Amino acid sequence: MSKKVALIIGAGPGISLAFAKQLIASGYRVALASRDMDKLKPLAQSIGAEAFKTDVSSIDSIQSLFESVDAALSAPEVVLYNPSARVKGEILSLDPNKVSDAVATTAVGAFVAAQEAAKRMVPQNSGAIFFTGATASVKGFAGSSGFAMGKFAVRGLAQSLARELSPAGIHVAHFVIDGAVKTDAANDAMTADAIAQTYMAILHQPKAAWTWEVEIRSKDEKF
Image 1 (cartoon, rainbow, N blue to C red):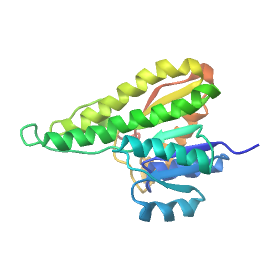
Image 2 (cartoon, one colour):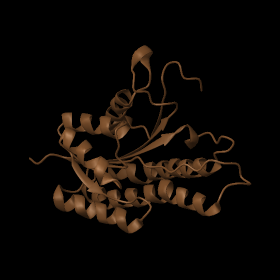
Image 3 (spheres, rainbow, N blue to C red):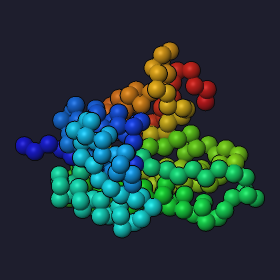
Image 4 (cartoon, helix red, strand yellow):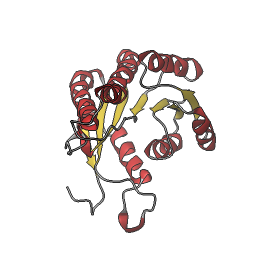
């Protein structure tokens, strides 16, 4: 039998790379997608993944990405949407055009990726669509309205899709990364590897005990 395919959109050296490694160890073929191919290609080669170029601010680009993965590997059975765009500043100083672009990258991109994933998963009655969230997904901070808007929207998308797609056998999950991701695991710090283990645990949940959202933080993180 051919291996299952996983697609990670917005791939980089942190959470997405750690998740990709664990997916490969579990027998998946992994497609990594990003706008910067100069950085992505060596990253993908280092773990035996495939690299694909995409611009998540473009609906057409995301749709083309899925077509390219279909042709090169096969339709993905796991899709993680990782990208977000940060626009910081007080309300009186923010550029509405930049906020609009940021929300499009974070939220509209997530919607298009989920739609393309669902087109392929619904006929199979199986699959998983994951979204990487942040503290800003559930808590809007002063000076961060532009970022919170996008992250709140992705959380709403995930909640709606979980209710819509779960009966079709598709597991939708939103991960609230509540705290800074560390590179040193000393003192049980929250690292990308530790987060990826939680992603894998959610991926392997039985259908009789699915969760649509999980908050992830280190034991010392205040919340």
